[in-house]
Amino acid sequence: MIKKLTLILSLFLISCSAKVDKDKLHLLNGYWEIKEVTFVDGAKKEYSINSTVDYIKLDSLSGFRKKVDPKFNGTFETSNDAEAFFIRISNDSIFMKYTNNSNIWEEVLTSLDEKSFSVKNSEGVTYRYNRFEPINITP
Image 1 (tube, rainbow, N blue to C red):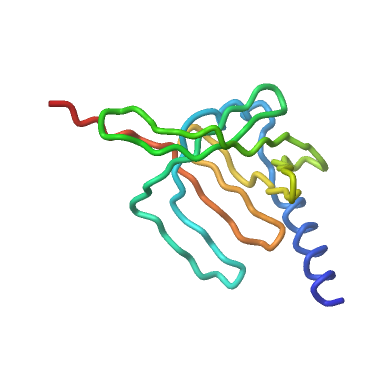
Image 2 (tube, rainbow, N blue to C red):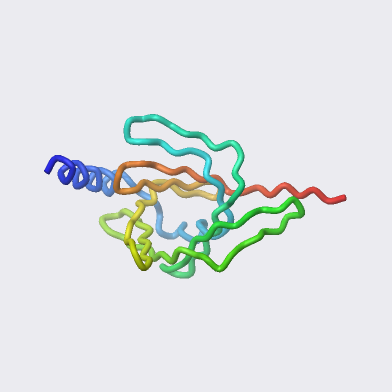
């Protein structure tokens, strides 16, 4: 019972505090690398180097997200695996809703600009991403 109340309260607080302009959703398009995870207790995990990058493609209110491997020549290696999502707007909050064969989950978009974005999941964990800057080493 306490877990349910905590989850409901967390979702309520998340949806009340998150304000991202829906006209900026196009900024999600592109390559992103995770920079930091903030847990409910305030603990943080920072990522200084990432072997994979998230590629997000959003068209209108639906899109996909997939992991890609950046290469030193500026290209990416990828697979056909992708997580489809759609944007749900409710009470001035913007949610990224994912659905696959075995799971359904949402993340609320808490910040978004040209260089970074953050999402918070239903457990209250916040993920902060920065736009990926490729390292291009050519001979």
